[in-house]
Image (cartoon, rainbow, N blue to C red):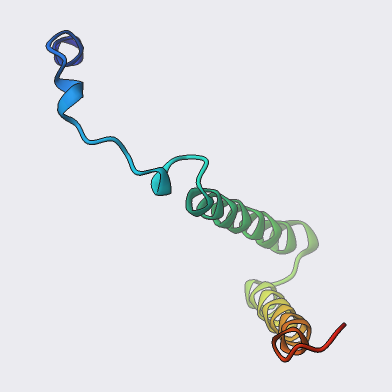
Length: 89
């Protein structure tokens, strides 16, 4: 507590370089990181639900997520490929 009070009263905070706006809490980078953490928590919740409530074995849950990953990659590839070549969807 005393260190913090001395830090403020001696104005040592003026010597610290401010955080770049790129790493600020509302920047695109940090918002994306937050979304990834929320996605990982949602996946963990779904995995626990599938294994504990539905009764699917752990390997089955992993298989479901692997197939979902492959399917979403397929859909994103099909949607983005015509856009790269200039075709209208």
